[in-house]
Amino acid sequence: MDNDVKEIIRITLSDTTDTGQVFGTHDSFLRKIEKAFGVELVLRRDELVVAGELALKAAGVVEDALWILESGETLDDQKIDYVIHLAEEGGSFRSGGPGNDVVAFTHRGRPVKAKTLGQTAYVEAIRNHDIVFSIGPAGTGKTYLAVAMAVSEFKARNVEKIILARPAVEAGERLGFLPGDLQEKVDPYLRPLYDALYDIMGRDAALRLKEKEVIEVVPLAYMRGRTLDGAFIILDEAQNTTREQMKMFLTRMGFGSHVVVTGDVTQIDLPDGKASGLLHAERVLKDVPEIAFCRLREADVVRHSLVRKIIGAYERWENQGDRKDVHDKR
Image (cartoon, rainbow, N blue to C red; front, side):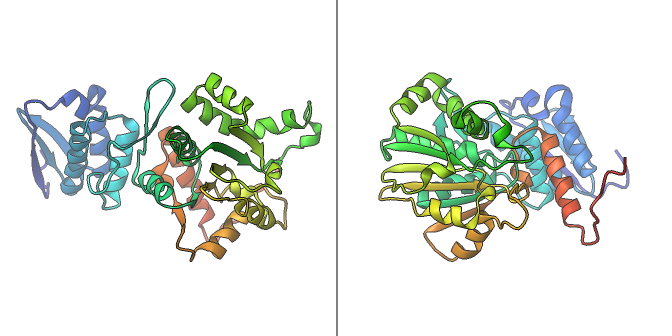
């Protein structure tokens, strides 16, 4: 090893440690840790030696990986990337990290769990508050976890129906030029809600409950004039509501109901001059103690690792004080 190494940490591995799981296929997880912290990782009998200036942080990632395995979870690229990100920010997966708390099971029996600290806080907020706002970038599980919680509450008979709503805002397209009747025109806007519902409940079961109007998947405009008791109500893509629409939606809440509002304020498709009802609601309602606001971040993205990098790149560009809009000169 390099004689200039400033720190060496030795991690003892137990006889039951599955080094293949800890190290990854062809040691891919170790290589990620080495690259992230500029350290060297060497296995010597029952010891993993971590050497380098940032050996302490790198060793923390290894300890987190071991903790994840011991808790019965499996390791994958997403988890390793997330644990590395936490360590880079001075955090640890072990301190308040996601555990084995199952939110729901999909129709195939796969457990749905919070995968990040932000998601864990989001799920806890839904359990402890009647109204929850979840604001964050694409891929952070805002909608999926909300639908999972809705199904869980319905199966536990804590609510009598599930209502999923979305504003049908034209993101560069014109609804009027789409073929079909009104329902067929708005269905593409509701597809992400259907996808989450089908994955968790199964398509046939969800459609049966939809026919009985126990589950409703509707455009936001269909909510006007209703009062909803005993319902789990989700408003998705809420950044595309106006102030008036947001107030209308929130005042639909009845006794025994739960409301979850999700949105990504970096993807507002409202016409120029229209303020986002989600941003306005955050300012107006932030001091109401019964309402929780959860901010999910780039680190909470649970899709392909490139999605996190893309979101980070866009955030850095948006935050440049001297940036200028780029126009296509072709």
